[in-house]
Length: 262
Image 1 (cartoon, helix red, strand yellow):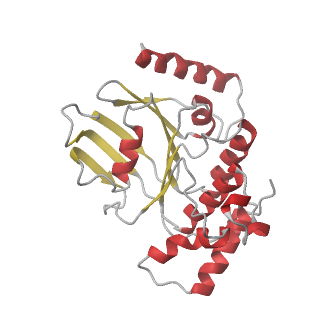
Image 2 (tube, one colour; image 1 turned 180 degrees about the vertical axis):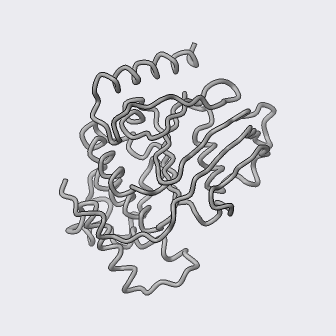
Image 3 (cartoon, helix red, strand yellow; image 1 turned 45 degrees about the horizontal axis):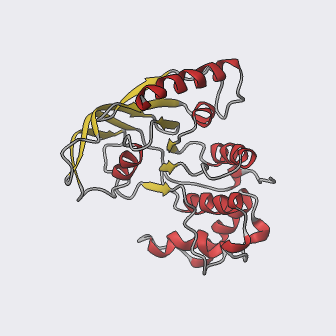
């Protein structure tokens, strides 16, 4: 995968830290809370990875932070940001599915977010930025290709470029690499770590190895309702090569997660 230097692309949004204290979330149509007593700190400009069994509330938490559940849940607790303002308008969301529109070419898919952006942008400036981003993810020669002509890994690189195009300080990622083969997944982990450097990233994953490779902060969501437990991460800077220390942590995570399936 040939990738240009991401430093050639300028991002203006300043990273934001997020703190959750004693958070409690209940869907209005449910009698049982999804999250309770949740305490987490998401540092500005770092990767925070969340692990947990299916249905424990990981995606619910991301969707709440993205402002997608306000009318569906009851929320209590403290949600504080380092800059003291609201998360509204500060978040980009990258889902497990690439969600590319099949009738738009690659370039127009990357530009799609600008059509819904209230900020005024020059169309020429936007196109140049989209072209730079496609170059940074190794797809400079595929601007006019249709999504159906791309492999799964290439489609996710388009989705990553589209996420970067939004230029938000907080990036929420809901298992974006889970459907990819091991080598493509490994490459996209490295690429994302490079291109999202200095962004505040929250990554949901079911893969302990992926979390160990990428996390500056690592939390397990466990229990019913779920609460968060913070785990220490290896000393090496992410993205990490899986050494003995990483493998030991990976095994410890699997052992602990296994308790939620008993």
